[in-house]
Image 1: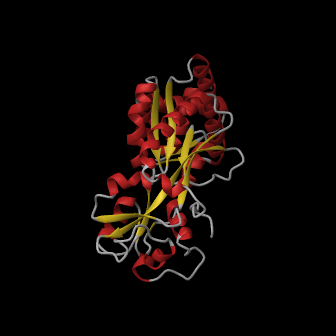
Image 2: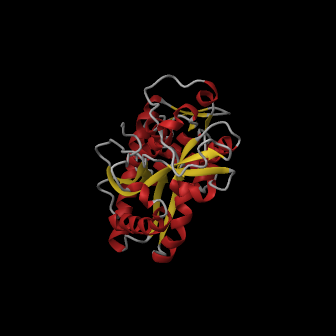
Image 3: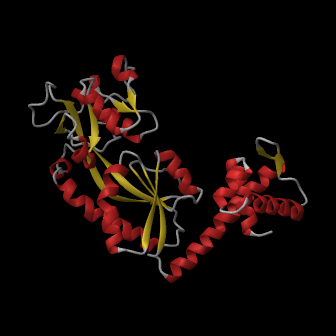
Length: 317
């Protein structure tokens, strides 16, 4: 057997269709089918149950699939080690980023990355924290940018920067004339992202509602999937919310008022990776560019990160 046969098996298992699997592998369907049959003959077992509409794994096929995936991952690691020995700053870096960070950070760093490290290409994957960490553990990703600790022993983390959270209010809100607003004052009208977004938990905890009375009314039933939708709800007068400072430049133009939080709540953006990743130089290059890019933007909110009133998002008072 060879790695190509294993790739074909994994593709068929993913798509459950020979035609789509062949298209993904850039080969003809007859070629893919013949290679799968060759693999079955070599192993002496049937890996797939074939029907006119769908392809399913046999029980033993499911077991062998796990070994095939691990073998391909290990082969990929060997190739990465070889590339790193030649030039660690050459080739793709598979980077996962949470949705509340990606749209606002990536425009700041993609061009500087290309200018400073032209051989390094970013393959971006945007998702919530848990799928990103799983992708990192499964070697589908090389590194991820998250705003909470992974709490996984085989993952290492490096704090890159602290990002203040800001209060987003409707234009006619009673606090619009104030210089700051307290987190607790927003508790009763706080709108948050849907479950699965770490920013939702951070906002609830910062405003003192996590673990408190059940949220009712509009604030309890309206949960947005994106920050853009959340801010549109705020602009329409349905409540208030907290947004990260990097998003202020674009979201602050949508008919809302942004105010600093008197408690100085912030979240810490971390770069998570596997300890054995063979291209640590690429991660250091990414870290360097990120720090340099966000400095001027977050500098406008620097006073929020000083003094005894500073509170990290997710910590209780």
